[in-house]
Image (cartoon, rainbow, N blue to C red):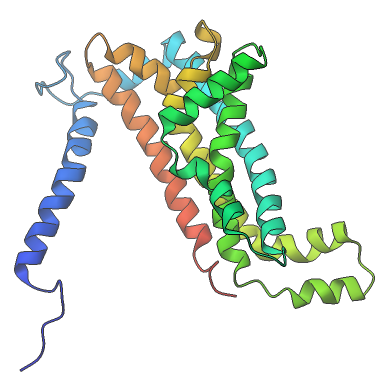
Length: 264
């Protein structure tokens, strides 16, 4: 009699289906109601794309979307550069330190609300004017560890002998990095950048605490929060669907780019 593998029984599949339904059914309902022709967010009145059209003519949403794009692009660029260099620096250390490891990845495990309050206190202590620049700096702090983690995963299988060979052949450190190291780890760098971009687009708590007053520093998640306080409308469902689609697309591309980076 063949031995049944764990998780292959019909009962397991039923429970697995229930778990996935619990996780993704509310999202599916949100997406469906974003195409609801009626004004009530919970009563289906027919198919329509008018709520997506109305988003294009909403100046507040367009302004928030532009702010989100600026914050995500700039913070991703800075976090990717610093995170890549940090990953290389940590991996090339001869003496490994668990304390340093914990310090590097602390922003990943610290609750967002704690990190947000800490950054707000830090900016207030330095008397920094709040605005998009403080949100960008806060997102760099938040995303840095994620980029470093992804790049380090590729460096674990990196053949450092090719770097030594490049140095023996007379190449400078910058040339070696640009012509040897970077092309090998580039998929992981791109994957880390896409992950950082996704996290920056979705992030709300840190942006809420480090943003300045007024609409000049309002990001898209903050705009959704301000709209939802007056009730959920199909327009909010449409906006949330667009944000979710952008995030999922970036994550899927990140996973495809990062595929195989754990192998030499």
